Image (cartoon, rainbow, N blue to C red; front, side, top):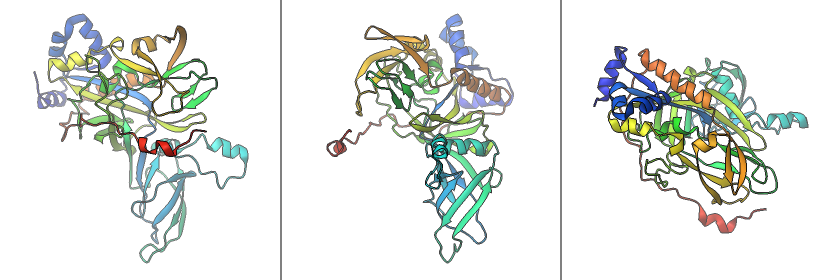
Length: 399
């Protein structure tokens, strides 16, 4: 029907027709797939959900005299310093180092703050305390450094997320007798609640199930700024079982993402904390899908009724946990599902409202000619298996 160059030409001349994925689904219901495909050039998708496999690369710039940092803390949160002299990686889930704290209340409060909160503060332009210990060498004679940094006083500051944009995920429940604190939040005993993290039919990769429209180098909306798909994500598992509409029945494809954090907005990058589990990072991600064929619209017309996720029992402390079968996102979004004859209330981790806002903001960027589409330099592999470490099983004990 059209090429990426055709679409970008329309974007440059502000003639491109852009619909959010929800608008597309509504139009398809009214006029059908064929007519919708003729009318639209770009479909925007979005999500705003937690992803703990996130972090930031920071280059501080050299001090005088220079320092070769081997240990470093940002507002008390340890950063990895095993790179160059002043290169750091700050993980979103790293927690405050409480070894220097004497007050028990202060220690308890510090556990709710992690690398994700420091990343949010830096993006917001707030000052962050830097404490560093160096390895003294002839070219790096300085032993320590204690100063304040902001996003304006450091050289590079960019997000690098080894895993983001899960194509699908699980629904967590707890069939046991005690409250469980998990990466999905608290799960109440005796099937007291069910928590899901994916926003369903508006989620980016569920609308491009075979990853034909995106790849390494695809430009995206990341945290309110420009980002790119850098690689396949960790735990990338495109060989997950799929429905006839090609959507996976559980965790499948993932992507590694990168973007300049100095361009980002704290509205779309938020530190969060899961009680008795740890910090994570809420991140707004938007992916534009070029309408190059009718098939693109057919895939994007998928509804919550047509996408399912497995209900997993977290009370069994094993890698492979029992499930209570599959439920559709339409059922999940009604607020209750039925498990073994019991009505169980549901709640999402993803913000559906903010996911919609990401797709809308990306649409507006494209309509204003501020965001164009990029041709991937390579495809995302679709043949990756998921390799567990079962050989360790005999050495582990569950207490």
